[in-house]
Amino acid sequence: MSKTETTMRLACSGAALLAGITSSAQAQDVNGFYGGLGLSLPSGSVDFSYDGRYSLNGSALGSAFAGYSAVSSGGLVYGGEIAVTQGADVDGAYGAPGINAMVDLKGRMGKVFGKTLVYGSLGYSMGSATWNDGTGTMAKVGGVNLGAGFETPLGARGFFGGDITSRNLNPTGTNDNGDLSSSYVDSMDMTTVSVRVGFRF
Image: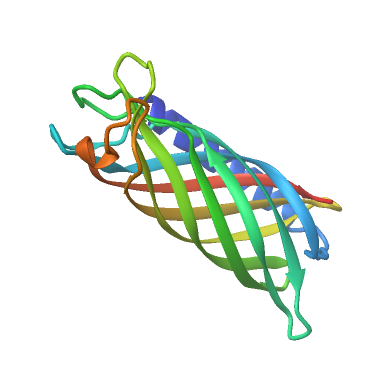
């Protein structure tokens, strides 16, 4: 069994266990600050200007997130979030071992159904590809992210959830040597499916 398959089974087993625990949880006030940690499975590819398109390695990545939610008089939940996902490797690409940590800035809007918050998100993501010797940034990338997810209570103030975020990224600015990022990367696509556990403050 591969590392990715093992990680996926563990994540699914944990999700099933937490889902059972949350079945007896009471509804929470989702207004205010929140934060937590996650486990993300990535997919996607990088199109290198000099070497073609290569897939991202699917090994699990750690993630962290924090944000603020407010509830309107009509019951809509809206707010903002910042999330950071650990860097991923690129399979078989010459000249680059992978990408650095991905930073996502998101606006979120959703609604509570029963005890569970369901939301959609839209925002901007930033990341970079690294040189194969790890000495610095080969190319910076940025672009739109689009996602959806849910959060359901876990105890008095905790929550368990899932999130899927898709990013369409293009080269931006220059690398560490002052070269245009577009000289090295044409585009990057990255989608993460995440299991998340957090706490409301």
